[in-house]
Length: 98
Image 1 (cartoon, rainbow, N blue to C red):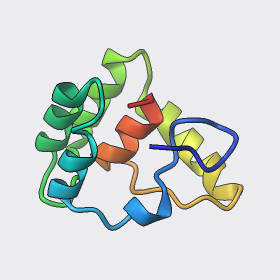
Image 2: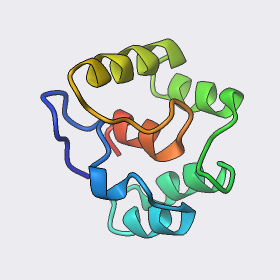
Image 3: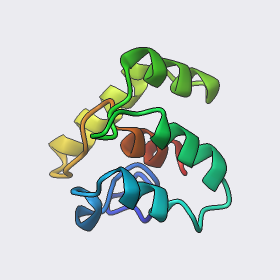
């Protein structure tokens, strides 16, 4: 995935904003960490939304908090970026650099 703003890695390209779970799994097939990323996608619901406890655990494993993600997404939206919902698995993965 490519960034569209100055903060690399966290913005989902507009053409991917309507992806479903199968599309996200396919998108991560070429990723070096496809097994990990795919497991995060599969842990989400049909709309690729993680339970808040799962989002918290994912971010904590990488040394971040939900508040960190929320602040960055809000800052991006203030710059005109469109971000997926806070608990969207692919949005969290992109923010983490996957």
